[in-house]
Image (cartoon, rainbow, N blue to C red):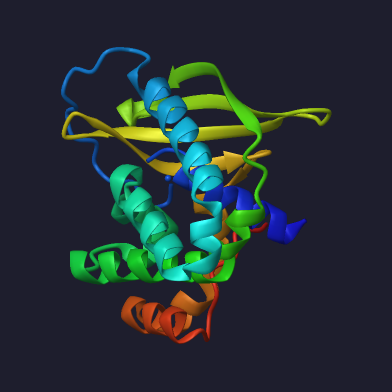
Length: 215
């Protein structure tokens, strides 16, 4: 179940191209209501279709799969903002370069650990958008969706997005009530109490720590 959840988190993060230390909310350009939902739905369909059509290629070429994952992360996930939320108080006043390094190391760790499992992920499903509601304090919107599977219960997936330069970017994903940000915040709190952000990032890259999206 833990592996399935982590793979689902990675798939959900890709399907959008995915606190104690609150960042100041910058005024967002006017964007039509419902546009965030469209971003989620269009991207989900694109990702699932690509995983299905390029499955054989990705199985024979892990490098192609990793490149695909990275390109989708960069396209629609606000990695640095999410990393700030994961770091919490440990990120207060941290240099932007250290935060970006931690964000990249965390994404690489998640991809290395679960990336190939995406090839076994059920792409024969559909995504239904149930609602789009504003987050408190003008922080963005929550897009509530369901992953619909034939003969099985739907999987509730919520996306939290914020407007960055007129584009909706995901900064958190909640699957069955479990937050990506909170899961990693819990996981990295102890290491960050003992080491610097750069040291924790280095441990992630060396495999001494592994990102695991579980409770």
